Image (cartoon, rainbow, N blue to C red):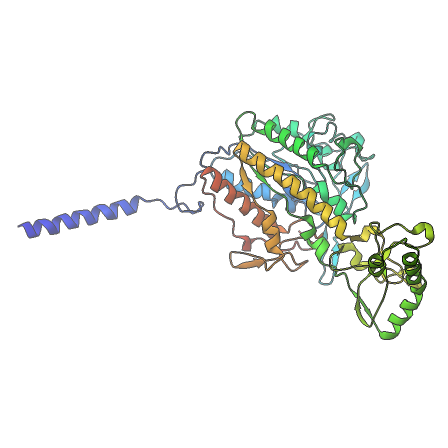
Length: 492
């Protein structure tokens, strides 16, 4: 009898276990199979603040498909599964990209890869800046915005677009001519926000080959040029003000730090030594630079130049691969003696992407005047070692601010700098796909060499949601990046 009782007890326990298993619900939308939750964060009203990355800029333009694939929009899709409200985006008028101002084209159309080279798509822009969009918008990503632009009055004033005093993208959807990006974001009373800003505070300096100024020490951004580096103290003040305003009513959020923009394909695709020469061609060029080299030695003999710098500045071609010749403003200025500031580029310099179609071209059809060879590349084509250092110092300072404010305010933090480093060193793997920063084929970046591809934006969205999960106890599931293409086709 006792034996039979034991079997009955075992059988009853088995039935209880089966019943219990049947009651377990597996949520396919969560990262762990449990019921989907946003944890301690409320995502019912999400607003995204940022620049072109938040907006979805890709292939040198902003267009509908790219906006729909922005990391902010992808995040909003995750939030919608747990009660997140509508995420409104100030959509462009077409998938051509580009902008019109009074009927005149002020921004060109997007690029596509024709199998050989990036090429503008057919058609003309139809998005008119002066056609105002009604309502408020959750995606407040503004292409071209620097940190201090988020708090700049009249940044969306249509009347200021033509003179460069306002932003054409924000002009389309700003609530008034005098408002700020931040004011329009705060007015929506978000419960959750994302903030990724600061890349443009150094990017235009870098993409212009460093022709701007490093404004460190200048606390008045109203005096900055478009290609200048933002003073880190200005950045810190603005960033703090933005986060304070966004969290004033208890909203939680996620912020991201900044990669070195010099790791983007825009700076890593064109080699410093693309000039292939025969022995005869090298000898001919060396003859052409003989007077310049002799002038350097004369400067040394006169005590006006060190032997070390003279060696660095000496132009000497050889058979095989050769470095381009560049103008370097960081060299000791001896132009008053008729000695220009020329030198060969080195592996420590970065030649910008547009130079690939410029190096080797003829000046005025003159076969003896070859850009990058017999005619040195101007400063705008190359980011020198010293300019690279300036970009990195500023970026490091910005990142210190971002991390400290994220910690102080209890925000989720996305470490994107290290991810960009990984992309350039073997790549990262998602869903079995290896993604790298290689231009065109790497999968992470679009054809402008700066902005992400569709897959790149999906990866960024995953990094954001992973940070949100870790900080707030949420369990949002990563997107399958294999479902996102690496390049947009000619026709959408």
